[in-house]
Image 1 (cartoon, rainbow over the protein chains, first blue to last red):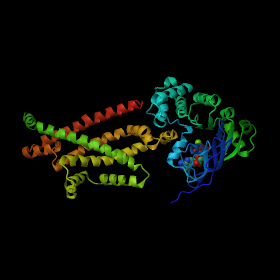
Image 2: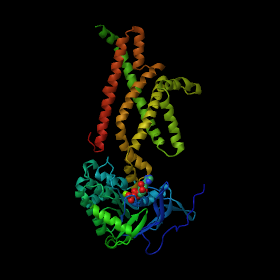
Image 3: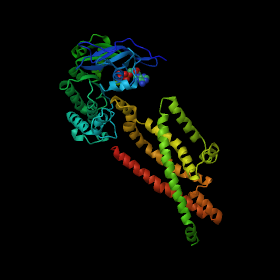
Image 4: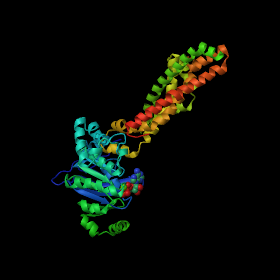
Length: 272
Length: 222
Ligand SMILES: Nc1ncnc2c1ncn2[C@@H]1O[C@H](COP(=O)(O)OP(=O)(O)O)[C@@H](O)[C@H]1O
Ligand SMILES: [Mg+2]
């Protein structure tokens, strides 16, 4: 069977190419269309907040960009290179596992439930992939991990296992673990949703630092509207697998145009 | 008094038999573990050519009697030109049989590791091999240890069947002594006690120790 050849550009070139581009990306589970021909560009250094009702496809956007699953249609570019596709004989074909693994190096992801490796200490969690995947020496990896654990305020607990850490502490270690791979883009999927209210601040403080000091490119799915408003450069409101409305936070929160956005925001405000 | 005389006359044979049983158990266990890991991992593959043979293996060895398997390996394989010494045939049969059960424990243990662990490892660009070896398998191992303890006791008990191809294990010695002395109650009573001591006195404490060791390694307290 011959692989399907696609006629998208094999590389995005030019002055102001986006760091991330979703081009007509569709994701289906059976008959259920979860992402519906989605277009989304994220510029280098931009912080994009993704909001929207449950089931609107927010997590799916991040999972596709992390290449945890395959898309059904369209193409995703990271730093001008296709992520979901690769070049073969002058055309593009679906990416193989090796290509995906290389592209994943550009992306870091933090999950709602942290997903730290329970059989490793905080420090071991942070050096595992740099040593095993990047081939760093253990000494270098430890140095890098300690700097990052210090940055997230977890250096003192470096030798604790996750089971001995609170949710907020585990999430901060998880952020350090992702950053240890030096990704170009960081993805946060409701990273404070599983936390007790009093520790949410620990994690948002770290994200704030990443925005202000490190100018990292980020996509953040969140239900914390106040935080999204404060921190993001742009807010995307997802509805039914599409971006219903997007714009600067002041506009989306202050003067939303779409009726669905208005309804969603007033429902969220009421709940709080 | 009479019993002491019996012990003096036949104790050494029973001890030699027990040592053979322990040796059989250890060799079969080693084989079972190797087979279980390989077949268990193969069963998780999505490639038919990989999981197919492992599934056939597990089905055949779990679906038929251990005794028949022992007879096959000892009596039938020679007809195809493969002759094994009886001790070797015995431990291979027991190891292959329990390995099939162990494969299911390995498969289940790996599947019991939460999806989030696989995804976190994938998100860190780990290859499937690194992910399995460094992240998934160590956690699966911890989940699997308690059922493996039971399986090893089954294995020890299963080794008694190799007496039927004249491997001089504890069961074989007991039958031999019985056939010359007719002191069935004494000899089989002692055999019962010895099997019990080996399972509850050796295997169970060893597995408990291993569980505690592993738990400590993963920072859990039991
Ligand atoms: N593995 C899956 N199989 C089937 N349906 C799925 C799967 N993952 C997600 N979905 C469906 O896709 C839709 C979008 O899911 P998701 O992106 O997680 O939404 P959100 O994060 O916005 O709440 C939901 O209807 C969900 O039920
Ligand atoms: Mg979600």
